[in-house]
Image (cartoon, rainbow, N blue to C red; front, side):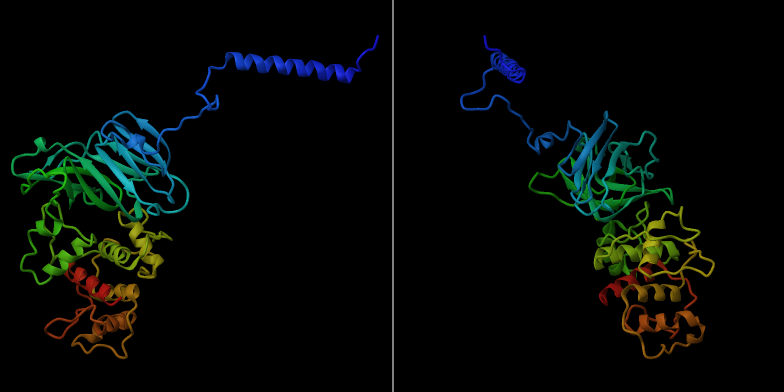
Length: 399
């Protein structure tokens, strides 16, 4: 009698065991279609979740994941390099293009209904809900490039003779600011550069219900301003509103002759640089008195680009009114026109501060700013909103 070696015996047992397992698998597995593998992996089409945005919380392929919060909110991780569209049941949505988010890390984008929203402006009607849009939990995030918000409404809910327009809530001034928007059947779209609370309000001025292929615009903000007709800066104000650099107040006024603060001017100027010169928000650092200010990011960006330097005590004085020589200095730093060979010959030239002399001279020579009819420059005089808008627009034309 011949005995197998232990190694051969072990190999035979292993072969038999494997053969039994294979037969069992083939017996139990359900038959597949002819010529197909028995194991099949199915994957939904990328756009399948967008088929019915009115009933689905969704985000497009740029989103890494989402957390639904019933009918009141949604949070989605978005990669800056890809962008995404985030929608809350189709009633509020934001389209974030690639490169709009700062940095490279994924950020959570959230939309939430506000349970206790600020009161609407007097005489206006909120058409649905107020929504708070956030990035990483921040309600005042500013984007590197504009994003598009879409808010829905029911035409039948509009009061007679009124039309919908998007508003955002200015937390610093506790007021709603109109952005207008483009009206589509049951939605309004608007382009914005920052996140906060947004709502859709009914405004005076009837627009007939648009057909899908005929889309009228909501009354534009510049046309709604009630106190600029006939003003010397009317066209300049309208142009800057169209650019998205400035806006009016909730009462539809612009107050062109009101003084402008240093924070407001820095914000206007940085927005103009972003929209017309290709700049981005660069929050390098702030000042000792701006970290909690509503304009902190714009002021920090202005510092980063060398537009502002602040006071000697490391403060910026954001709520101080800006004077004309300060405005000239900031504008010249922003657009860098050719220097002037000599200072302007104004009756009050000696009143120009030593540190501001070159800036005022360059601003006047390049046409960014001018003096008054009495041949004065009023370097210490308070700059008005109209003067600021005009000077910024003139500065952009020199670039």
